[in-house]
Image 1 (cartoon, rainbow, N blue to C red):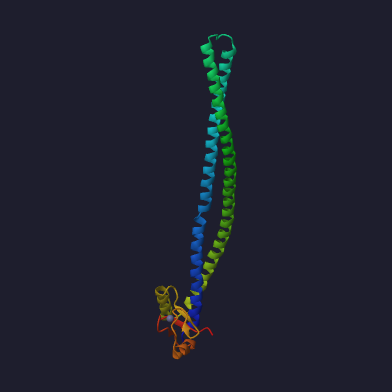
Image 2 (cartoon, rainbow, N blue to C red):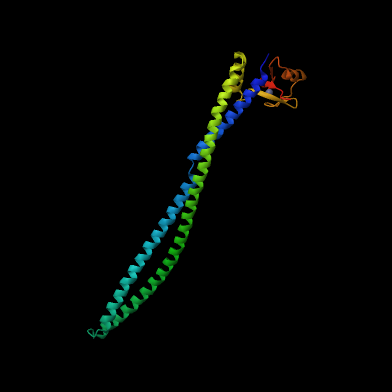
Length: 234
Ligand SMILES: [Zn+2]
């Protein structure tokens, strides 16, 4: 009396154990993966650095405007203070006044541009920060779901392993060894079902005799091509 049905159900258990293990492995990697959040954070930090740079540039322009205005006031009080009478000197002061005015106009234009740039940079930073916070929230949500799934799978795996031990206990030693050997050497698949007259694992067409054997409870039929144990579930 062979235990082909028991072997087949053991194979189904092992298939599920393997799928669960692969998913647990995937979950392990997904939980460790913070790439999206990390990239969003870097972008937000760059956005912040740009805002700070433009702010600094703007305040240096403002400081220069202030300095030029002081210069202008000094020039005007000297020019109209009455102390300077020499026409040449007065002419120089007049020229200086014009130059200072031009410089102030230039600076004010630069200031306006920098203010526009700053406003844009601030808007951009706000957007990047929002994206970063969203990525963080999404990640905690994902992680909570993954942790829940992991917990369920781990419990299921423990349960499957108990079931497996139970099944293995009912197998004769030679069949158990054959099963384990085939599983180890054939990508985890020791028992193949018969599917439309062919081996479901390797696809080889089976002889009528072999298909009859696969239905018999008295002996283990083996695929002549891949050597796996054949089971006909129909
Ligand atoms: Zn086969």
